[in-house]
Length: 158
Image (cartoon, rainbow, N blue to C red; front, top):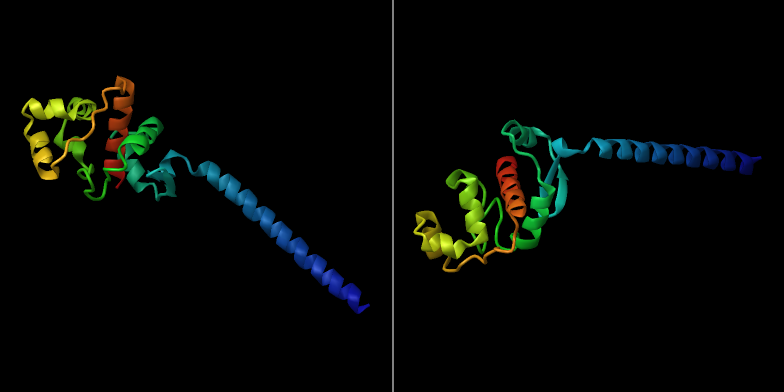
């Protein structure tokens, strides 16, 4: 008799835990569907939930997360650049306010040429960091657009 009660309680506990695990799984699955563009921050290839406030600022400015740009940034830029501090290269937060999109794309494509053209900010960066950023002449116009869009997005959400 005692074994039956013990078994009954154990079975009830396991049933409750299984139901709870299923509920958590279903909630997590449904919630993950909600973690779309408005609630996600991408940082160095890692996804973090966000309160959505910063993303809404970017969206209001007409800037959207660009997955291609994020991927290209991770592959080519993250070793030297960040959006919260200077590293091997300058902090990129707000760089879109210092240069036009065309200026940024030109600098990414061929920084040496921009420096030679006499651009004062490019010359200042070269003097400050004492090195020339590699050129990305191989990138297409669409890839450069994606990177600049991603840089603008990251600048706003951080």
